[in-house]
Amino acid sequence: MEVHLRELRYFVAVAEELNVTRAAERLFVSQPALSKQLRVLERQLGFGLFERVPSGMALTRQGEALLPVARDLLGRWAAGVAEARAAAPPGTLVIGMQTAVGRGLHQAALRRFRERLPGWEVALRLVGWDDPSGGLADGSSDVAFIWLPVPPGVRTYVVATERRGVAMPADHRLAGLAEVPFPALRGEPFIALPAVAGPLRDFWLGLDARDDEPVVGVIANTPEEVFEAVTGGLGVVLVAEGNAELYSRPGLAYRPVAGLPPGELAIAWREGDRRPQVTAFIDALRQVATKV
Image (tube, rainbow, N blue to C red; front, side, top):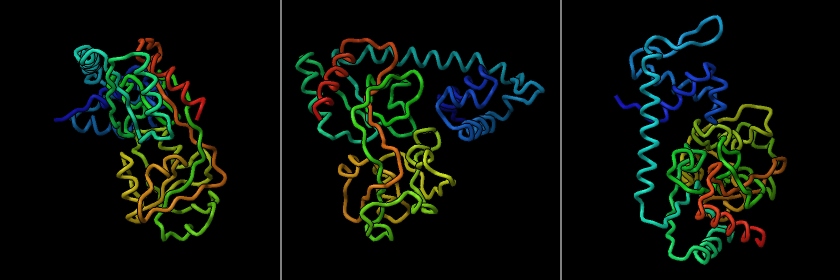
């Protein structure tokens, strides 16, 4: 039996809220995705964790017995991550990234950061879209470049606001347009982020501007998977204008989309994290972003 930490977090959140909707909001995931993961966990365990009661939900006897164990495991894991972080080489700032940053921001900020904290090392790590916090939630990143919206417990500073456009195969029926009206994409299969990405997935499916349900053709967890699916003719995808330049490749066409609010790229850090290396990098990035 393989039970993942994410499933334990989901179980604990629902057990504490006794309400799937509130737990989903707290976890920054969609309610259907949370319910599905709970069913998967119950099948793995071979017993139910919750039961319906007149007031809503309640833990089963098995769920009550498992809850303190799950909390203990999550607490021990968090403590272990903290110890591992402390064992890292002194002076290492870990930057999580969901996509390539570009936009003249990253390298310029690093130069300013190293001027302020000479001798510090920087480690870059690509984080899948199944973690909308960019590695901040589990402590594997110190700061992260992520697209809004973000999970709770995270502070942000927006470094770029860009139009959303559509990436499609170069021979797509809409590729001849200079600008694509969003309603013209109705019925098109979309490349989607995994369901656990929650509101971030919704944003890049354009749910904030839709009056219909999107058609999901393929689910992808990394930019490479996304654009391979697009060039393979499996669907289209909404893309920020700056990312269209970063991920340009043969067989791919990008067109701006009319009728969509822009996307926002931000640097993010955990609330209350005032470590000097975190503050130094954020300040460096603020200085660079004001000049871009």
